Image 1 (spheres, rainbow, N blue to C red):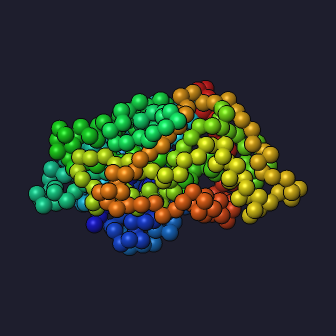
Image 2 (cartoon, one colour):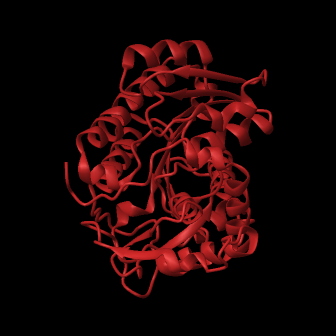
Image 3 (cartoon, rainbow, N blue to C red):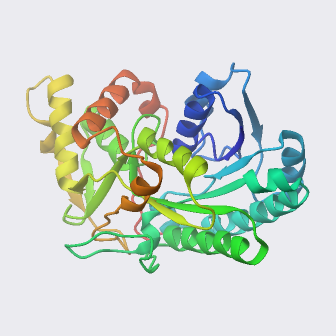
Length: 346
């Protein structure tokens, strides 16, 4: 099976490349290599005979058409996106261009390619639009997002992803393109961009800097280990029903302040400060960002029923693996700029 992975040098995309290459799929990684793309995350794939890389923009139709014609994919796993919420607050235009325009251009290229295939290949082809639970907005203290939850995006990032989901659905309903849509909860794990919460906490702690947490720190997220997400995407490609959407969640809800304290406790155990004080002493509450969802939580019941997927990592085991990886790869944190705060300032 040939799988074209867009955004394959990003956090989730690179995890997809590593997994699909290891499983024996023919993989083509198409990535523009913006600030969020890092080829070190796919270095383990670079010498594999079933892996290729093309630097290109999903919004560039002139680049997409020859790639599709040459590679002849059986599936497109669309992960290329601007995904940093803070950056979307400071500069939303790039998110509209990549997430909306880029998805439109890719859908058009995929539709043209799909129409040229023989009926048997058309039946087997899949276009998987990989999205986020943030399109659903914010929850109260009870309940979970399900596939029929209405979209209520609250940030420029989530609005652009919601629009991309609607485009993908429309290209299935209007033109027959075999589309599936997935919406995942908060991913974490190795190779994540250092602007994200967990790498920011670890870098700030080790550098004896303030560990910033938005608002009161009581915002709740459902955490999903990235490798479990990748396995879910593979299950959707292989066993999902065309035209449907699937929520992917780790079932690991935690307030941000509690998750940060857990990370600090693991750092205390594995790399204690020389003065013996706990890393949690460095935690500082900062001004909340605009449009910050209070609580996100996902029900993955449909995915479990239809594909038999289940997460392998629990919160404690996944977090321990993640902290250990960053401690063993300090260069990943040191070679990037400090985390940003999206406060709506240009």
